[in-house]
Length: 404
Ligand code: NCD
Ligand code: ZN
Image (tube, rainbow, N blue to C red; front, side, top):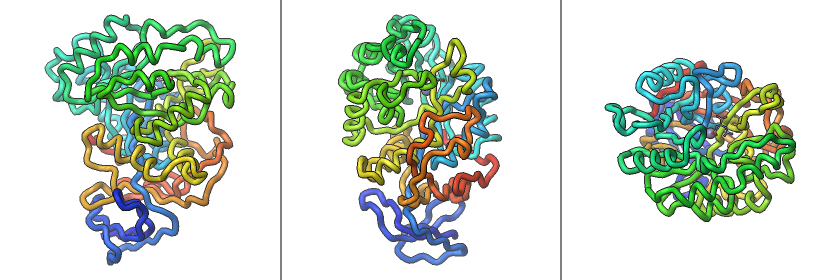
């Protein structure tokens, strides 16, 4: 048995001086005193690692932007030991074959554990594999689709599913794409796309709204649905971010939206934190027709830990939003430091706040909207008891498993 000792986050209790016993990747004991074969004492705090249920690792299809190796290394270095990958790869993940191919690629290249989302397309619910395929969830996009189709697909899946339906909640009729002179033009193009979409969505406990971005959208959330928010919609706005590089869907908004979403996040009304890691190269971002999307899986937890250290967020809320809530939302029993859980742990020195250094990040996209922002990176990251990252260096090749 390996033993990790330190001030550890125990759900319901908070930070407690304790020993965590780990055998074959699982937490087998949480006790004040434990004797094991290898005993490691940490000076900082020990938290459950994060589970990011919204990443785009671009594999298959866009190896110049990211792949399962580099994407998962970003995750690992940033304290994220499990991710769910979105289906908008090339080919889209939309049937048994593309699903199995992605699981097999991820199994051979990913250093973090993972799940795979399946795209909602015509007749999805008629497929023989609907609801037996081990997908993390269904994902519905508002691109290249009429609003009639978008809402009827949503309703059909919600009526028949036993998995979450994750929606990109912008109304297909309001996805205006007039050319951009400045970043605020993108916001202006999509001003009411989110509230209009959410107001028309049926309420269902199976519905999950990705990347909430507006106060008005928050107010129009279908009652029984859950939601997530990304660091860029909490921390970036049109006042502190002007670069066209920061074109993202849904767009960046105002300070008022940031603070309204942040309040809802603090209260747990928005339960889940996700990154929507959507890497594109800087050359693509600076082309005549820049794609939407920001990298973020590596900086998400470090930025939010800095928020905690500066007193703007409770640690209990961060742990819930990054570890417990996403796991629970996807029906997985994990994300806590307690007996029987996978030993997915991060060790953190809360005093170690440093400006984000682009040269130390792992994404192929090779840029970040958060350069020089203060952040607290984990000093050690353990996936099922194995050290996978230490001070930003990757310590393992692959080894990630499908969690679904
Ligand atoms: C996503 C991407 O690049 O895959 N971009 C984004 O701005 N969020 C697509 C998407 O989720 O809309
Ligand atoms: Zn996305």
